Image (cartoon, rainbow, N blue to C red; front, top):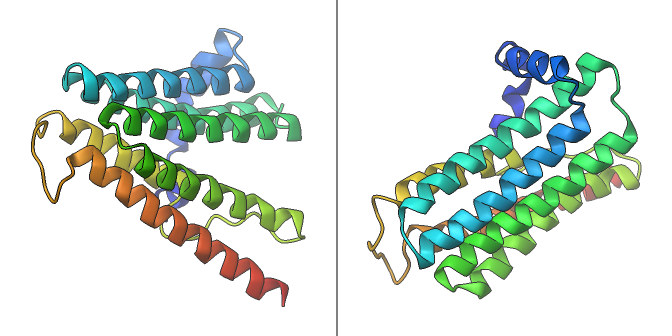
Length: 204
């Protein structure tokens, strides 16, 4: 996990967006909802990239990056407005999980590889679950492991852009999107296992 560690260093880039949302009276919950809508749109675009025209992959990639950026902005906006709360944190995490699920669902549906989608989405959900379950047993929230959410969105976005020019290319029976799903499945479950081992050892 690397990109999540960079959040404290991007605050100056967030300021124009935070101040802009604040000026129009938008709260962090509203920004979280917009981020969720971007995720649904990305899922639809990924599906269309597989069944209609590959150019939709590039559209989907842009929407994924927008979802990830807004996910950072909503927290900064909550701190700026002094309205950070457990309820807002809950909403943000629920929408993030739905975003993860629908984006991977769109990837899998577009190429008809539902079993890969199942493996990928369970790995991603278990990664997030293990991170927050640590809190439920008295530890701090766990963000460690191979790939965090910020890294995952960046990888999905980059591969989405590459899938457009690489449309039709095949390696080992899978195209770029298929290999992306395999990657998400493997690193998702490995990251979940890492977090479980960390929490288990911390509790002993």
